[in-house]
Length: 185
Image: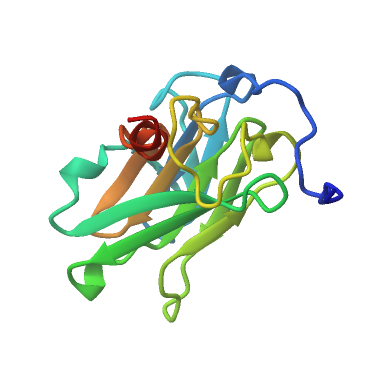
């Protein structure tokens, strides 16, 4: 019998966490210096006034991936199974000017911000731990089944030319059971 390994990042919870435990995140950006201000909780989007460099920071209104796909194609994959759970975000920019500047992953318990270096090629990997690493199964990569373990997570991708793009992690593959159906027929 194989001994089960419990990695230090593994979630030991027996239930999927509530996505509502972490407040929504809103992004503001200074038009002069480019400073980024992620804001969680509080008022609804665009109602907060943040000042930087003597001016009001711009509220970044997110759009769906379909609105920027002719310039920037985005995708994600959940990998690692129980012990090494991670979200890999990939992109393909049609021109250099459409490359992302930063990515943010909103999770069950908070978020992860990563800046994209000029030499960075996709994917950008967000390693998950504890409650954020909750999964129903040990598949690597994720089968995108009906349980959608990371439903409630959101990826935000910002580029100077493409603006802020929002991608909810709610993909579900209709073919995830196809292998077992074929065996039964």
